[in-house]
Image 1: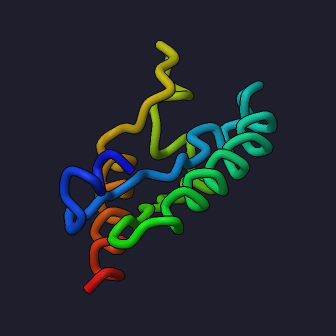
Image 2: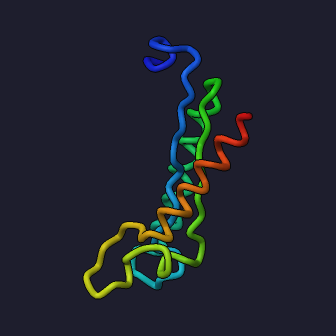
Image 3: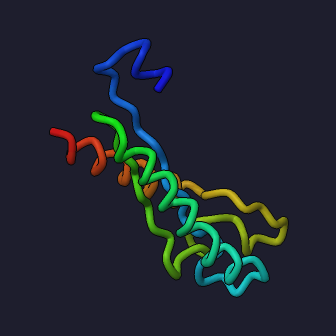
Length: 99
């Protein structure tokens, strides 16, 4: 609401939370699979209340091991270059949906 008050026409892009653990067999995979869809629903609900707010929804479904550093020797639960490219693609699709 504060953003809209400052500029009613500004485009706001939000990022849904992909399950980085999906398909990795990591101990967090199942709990993230339960919690993150609920968080994404909440984000989508807020976005739906405003014009020119869109949610980018990247999916790491079954591909967390190839799109993150989770399975690396030094555990790092962040996207790798391929994961970041996938996220960027989700933002591009979200922007295209507004045009």
